[in-house]
Amino acid sequence: MKNQSSRSLISLPILQGTEGQASEGRTLMRIQQSHYRPRSRNGWIAVVSFLGLMGLAQPPIVHSLANRIEPWILGVPFLYAYLLVVYIAMIGVLVWVQRRGL
Image (cartoon, rainbow, N blue to C red):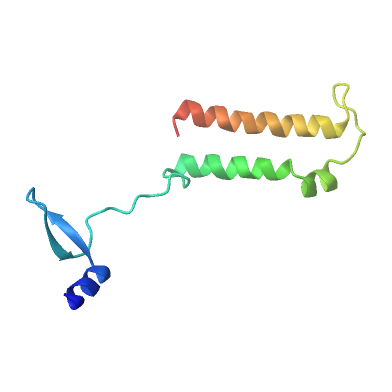
């Protein structure tokens, strides 16, 4: 009995047929792919473009590239116009993903 109980901890049983009998070996359960990773080329394009745009809106880039008031664009400082364009592009990526069903 002692040998059998330690053996059952090492390998998991496989259910075969409808009888429900177990045998020693590997399980039949598939390893599911993570739902966080894109599965298609368009999915990868969407993720990379969204993360790239998100990077353009984060402080290291904003503080070095877009941290200026001049020139004024459509009556707003450059920083606000820059962030508006980046956020609209991010929303555009999300709308594109929604319409494509990715």
